[in-house]
Length: 100
Image 1: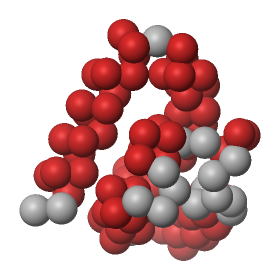
Image 2: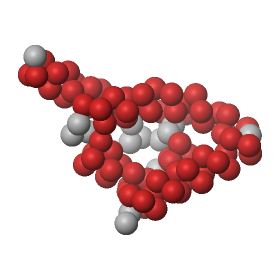
Image 3: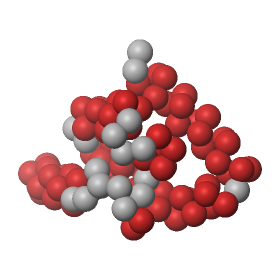
């Protein structure tokens, strides 16, 4: 069973990594939208994703959920300061904590 979960985990990682580092309208993620694809902040968060989240099943599930829901958040963030400001603060806090 653990081998099946690991194979599932590996396929999930592969599935999530396909195109997620690219910045395009259909695969736009919150930190990339805020800072730009080549920013230091996005690199910090990607490093946390790869080194901290991907190694565990719970982390992979979190990343999978994030990548499924974040594209729906981007248009709202673009339209609304009420959404954009708290998200910017949350992402900036995550970058600060991850970069310590």
